[in-house]
Image 1 (cartoon, rainbow, N blue to C red):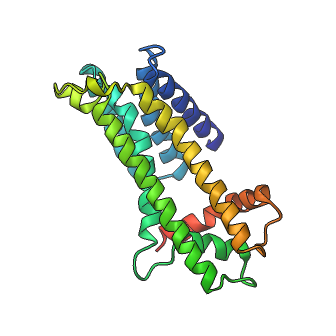
Image 2 (cartoon, helix red, strand yellow):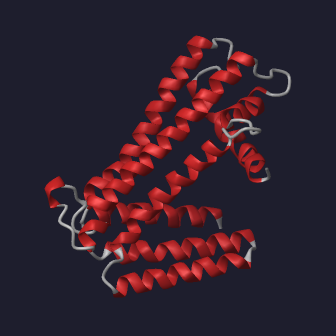
Length: 228
């Protein structure tokens, strides 16, 4: 089921990108109907019937927007919601009484025999703040594009002329689906370089080893964060 769900999400990403680029109008409904399908698959896999309610509501929303010829608006929401959720995840761990998310990664990656010292904890808090800031920036830019693009943007739908900015859904697609990943990769690469210089005794052989460890411990950190 997980492999099938990953395939559905990949198909959605490709179809949504193509739809926003204007390759074929028929791609929009194909992409949109994959969203409730994916949510139903998640509900089935999690054995949580309550998820059937939002899946049904999402399907109803897709149908209503399609009837109103405004279905394309939904294509803008997944990246905005995803980046907003991740931003809140990082930011919530910076609140008083909470341990920054990057420190949690470090504790799990390093193991109980090599806990982070004061310098590394301070650095990890800064890195957590940077990641939160990056995802907030992504959200702000994407919301701005959602407002200004023509003809699908919110201002255009409300009858406000925003064509002077020269922005289209293709600009949103390239930023949300490609540019955001490049910015994340850039931050990760720069942070890795700085960390290796400031803390040369990190228990990673190389960058590939570091990424592999992050993937391994990611679910553990996610479970800790969910159960707080």
